[in-house]
Image (cartoon, rainbow, N blue to C red; front, side):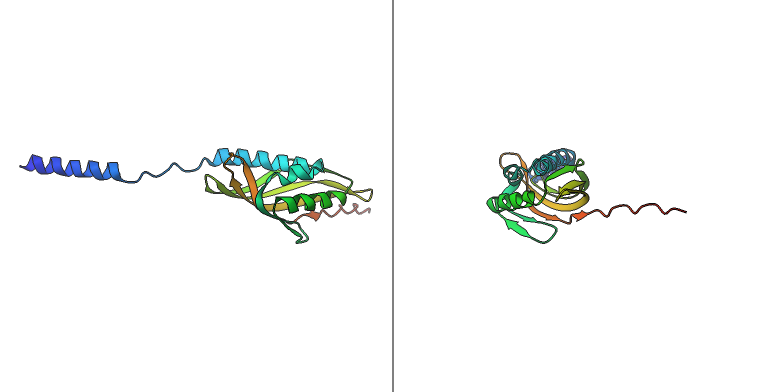
Length: 167
């Protein structure tokens, strides 16, 4: 009789375990990091080459792009127009590879990043260096491509180094 109870208890535990909802595996943070950094670099390359359409393609259809002066563009078409206007404000640009400072994986299709980029821009014939810390909210599309849904930039022209004091 005792063995029937034990067998019944084991069967009940097996049934509960088998019917319990299975937890999906956690998102692959390393793969997400690699994909997002590659996308961010492609977007940066679009800025350096002054390709407004390429830059806009890195945003979702309903994205928001906020520039350092708080100018805001909403939607891919508006972002493309904004990028073209931005590109008209400088003659050329160079950029160091994008640096991922922090990645927050929200799910396998959403992430938040804090990145920094630096480089130079030639404006009215004068080369100026800049540093651009920015935050992005990313969404992975049905096509498997990560795109920016919301970006805030805090770019600033880097101050020129003071000449060393002479004694």
